[in-house]
Length: 149
Image (tube, rainbow, N blue to C red; front, side, top):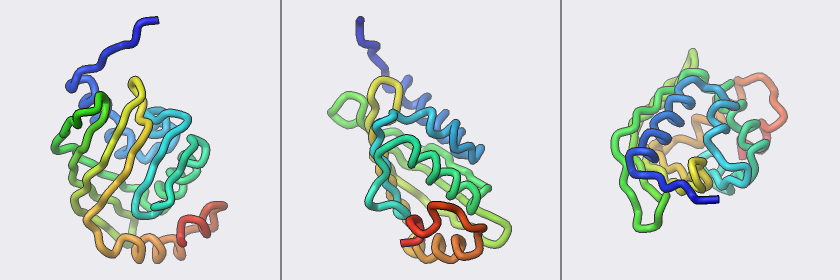
């Protein structure tokens, strides 16, 4: 079977569409853009998530705490390795009591048309404190203790 070659425009369209899924705060839809054997890290889970089921649980928790999501892709920077990029974007996440906004940069690697690796770097210095405070207010969820460490 012949491997499909993706262009920069193809990858950019996938990444933009993926961010639109984040904007809908739909865990299953966001996860559909990722491989089953993904590697995902962000300031809340610096140790990483390496399978889709755990990723979906994590997203459900995050979206329950932060139901308002707005991610706007600004730039896509291709790396020398095919299917590997850095992106930068503006973001805003919020609930009825708190709003966090800023800029972020991600390192992304694809396997075909699915994200295999996504390391998220956000400029919000107080990220962990905000997350811990919001999780204390959130209804009890199975992964709450893991996320608040």
